[in-house]
Length: 375
Image (cartoon, rainbow, N blue to C red; front, side, top):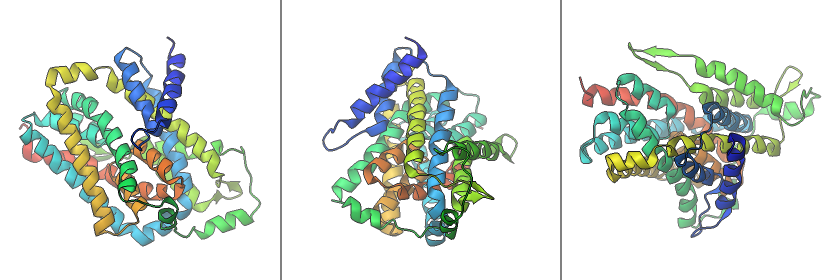
């Protein structure tokens, strides 16, 4: 089977399965990950570049759509976003150490499980720089699938358990748009391309440059936002201003949603086939306890993050779930939340916490290694 055939067959089957209602829950686009695991196990390979392209195609439109309300949302909730992202990272770090102690697994493997459970490739980069062991990559592959699916299920189950009214909860997300939006709409601006692809391309080009900037920390570790983090920030800036000179950067949300969904599909496809390639063998070698350790890290981090956002910081329900997806750096779960809310305003909550969490997740493994690493 050719790669192109496999790609679009995975997409088609994934969307079909994602539409099925199972006990009141739909996997949505995340079902593509499940199908990809199966294909990956049987040898299907998707080029790594497709995953990278998918991530930026998903996050740049998110930034462009969140941009008009982002600054006002930060003014209103900025301290809360910062606190939630940091505390979620601390919870993640504590659960990694617990996994190391409770399941009696090497700290390198526990850190790898944490990178997958928290779906953070930036964190994986830090962990692999701390040790020559292949165990972090093994742990990432085992925990990643549930790291994605666990939070995808969470954002669907919690609103049902709480009997949430979608329209009522969406209204609580209302944040005034910036004055730039009204100014943009009142001006006659140039559109180089009518569907928003130009704006997405500019956001990704600027974002990959921004994400590629590296800040050295110590002898071995560097901090960077990566292409995804840079793209969402570039999209936010362009979306906030709405235009640069006579060039328009304000687009129809339906166009942005189409590009966003295509990017998410590509990202999940690559991640799933990559994780599926050695999933069964790795679990067979190291035992089911590794999977359980990953589940523990994902479950405790995401649930405690939500409870804190909702009950302590008093964010609206969908806003609390949005900050949870951001603090878990989980792009797929944001996709699931967007399907639940049917309202892109929740994206600004993800966009406000994801870059902060990304940075702190880079530092967190270094602190754990300092106290628990092999010296």
